[in-house]
Amino acid sequence: MKYQTQKIAYWYFLAAMILFAVQVTGGLIAGWIYVSPNFLSELLPFNIVRMLHTNSLIVWLLLGFFGAAYFLVPEEAEREIYSPKLAYLQLIILLLGTAGVVVTYVFNLFEGNWLLGKEGREFIEQPVWVKLGILVAALIFLFNITMTVLQGRKTAITNVLLLGLWGLSLLWLFAFYNPANLALDKMFWWYIVHLWVEGTWELVMASILAYLLLKLTGVDREIIEKWLYIIVATALFSGILGTGHHYYWIGLPGYWQWIGSVFSSLEVIPFFAMMSFSFVMVWKGKRDHPNKAALLWALGAATVAFFGAGVWGFLHTLHGVNYYTHGTQITAAHGHLAFYGAYVAVNLAIFTYAFPILTNRDPYNQVLNMVSFWLMTGGMAFMTFVLTFAGTVQTHMQRVLGENFMDIQEGLNLFYLMRWGSGLCVVVGAILFIYAQLAPRKEIIASGTTESEGA
Image (cartoon, rainbow, N blue to C red; front, top):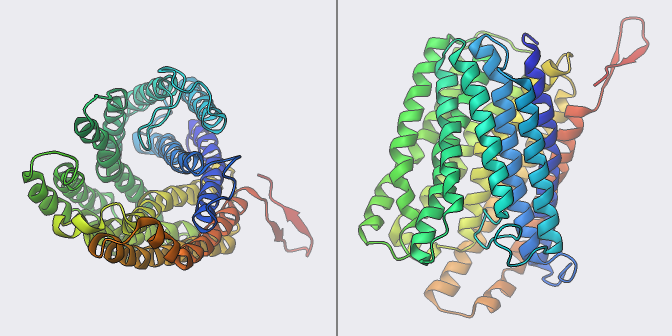
């Protein structure tokens, strides 16, 4: 490890993996409730389980992004992090907010209280005091990282990373604006949800991916930076107006149907560029890096993101198709594969690359790590196919033939059972991944005895 303050990333990554375990477990419980609707209905209702599942996903991904920044910025800027104390304070604020959210959701505390109680807006149900804490943590982070970069070397990777992180932090301000008009509310709500995952987060993903490929392949920085700027340009060009595909049916003017259809169709381009970029860099590279697992995750992230966010997003983004498929299980199929490929996998890639460096040992448990990749990726791919078929049946029966919603849901039970099985596969893979990262491995040494590498 070249810079001592890179150790900050270890604690962010550790906290992220704990929440990752919570998130996939919540998803497994939610999946079973689809199969058996009365499961835990008194103790842990579905709406609470779903909030825990989605909120923990967002928080652990953000922790991963912050940790990745604290890990790669010192190397890129060629200097230590501006203030390690502020970095740890930021982590404490985020963890306290997370704990407060969990307790508030599970025990339904302070119902109706504007400051302490949960709000009713999907994905941003956090109480106002937690939202304020997230804002303070984001401001601390931006100050810390920006000062580090300004006082050090500037690279395309740090420029794009900062642009993405500044963007997601500023867009968070819309979480505090909750207009009474529902159409207006949903319009600004998508400023957060869409412009995060199909805008600023794409920049963060691209910069982390570029850093990993720079380290793992040995390709010249100049080549990687040219690709990076192309990806950023296409992501912002398509992603900002691509928000219009969420405006079709919420009461906004009809021209958004055409703007949304055209520009969201173009959103497949940056993901195709990222996938092509990753494979071309590996092909051009001459370095035989020992951390094969990190390279697998990096290539897997780019590939699955292209199919999940690009192809599956395109399947129902045109307004003529979306009129029938909106809000069905096709949406769930796209959402699961897109989040997994674009953001889960890229976080797990940087974890896999960074942990051996942060713990001062060679890449370890790589076979187990790679097994976890195939378990999670295979499980998520099967889940996507199952939900796509379920959504197709649901669309025809419900939106075309007009049959009763609950009758259709009962008919989809076999699909939901298969979805739960694939979710179980993902959970097993996640457990194996965390074990491979944290557990020491016994190595055979020349004398024939064994020694255990410490964490």
